[in-house]
Image (cartoon, rainbow, N blue to C red; front, side, top):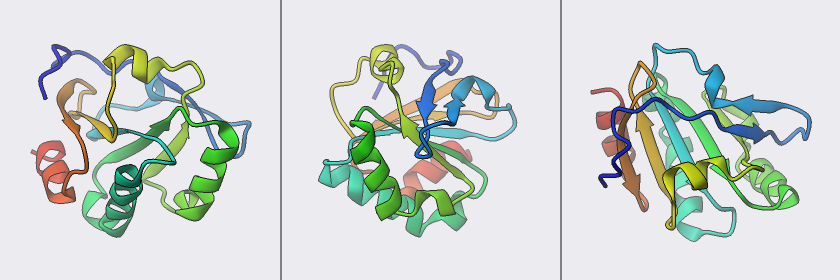
Length: 142
């Protein structure tokens, strides 16, 4: 999907992590590795399937930073985080976008919504809907 944001730097998005005290900010992502910003909701079956797919192929995505962003109420996110054991994967950072920064920046209306950034943290491409990990990997590591 063409957004008009291609080539632009990654926005600063603050995420409240599952421990309810850690704030993760995309502005702290060091250049050098591509990054996947994956917007999801805990109730969405396609988002759940995409999460399972990312986790089951996590080894092939070792060279990609994965940031999972949701707007779900915090207790629901916490359950989702535990259900998928997201904390077990060092390559995945997940949290609630309490300021709706992602949605406002990308003007999203569909999920799953994935923004893939290059090694210099500039937007390469946006993907909407459940997407094969091989496609994500090809774009991110191209």
